[in-house]
Length: 170
Image 1 (cartoon, rainbow, N blue to C red):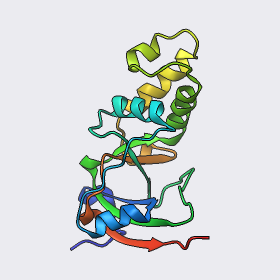
Image 2 (tube, rainbow, N blue to C red):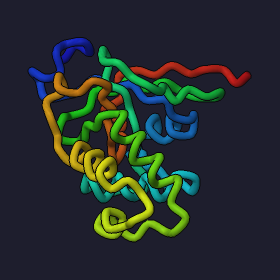
Image 3 (tube, one colour):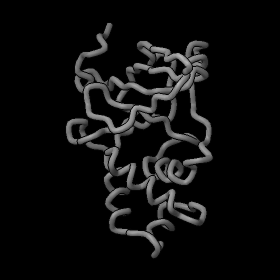
Image 4 (cartoon, one colour):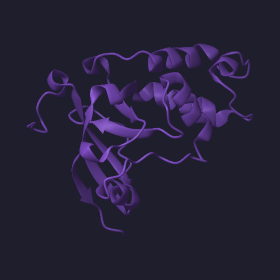
């Protein structure tokens, strides 16, 4: 038996929060695994992050690490705050700033994303900043070494849900 707020580093789990839609909650409550659908708006950036982190998904799922600073909460009307307890091996940690820098570069690209190697060879972007962000995102460090950690998941398994809170439609 675990307690939610035990030190996650000691028992191999992270305590995470993630805002998701009510449809995601319905999937999880029906005891099914949730995997995000491909994003049209952020397709280039998400694909780059998937490549960098070696994820096996079409769209990453983002979460905040409980007790650590966060830059965005993802709350929108008709959303659900999920509290998750996720095994460490199912979580990729990133520094929020480095992900934001990569996303900014990817949104400014006029052409299609074809891979990290091709992206690093481009002359129309600041490759030094891009390389620093990519290298930072690739390296998994202990949680304490992140200033503003962002957890990235391939999926959410129903057994990871500890609790949830629905927010009313406004």
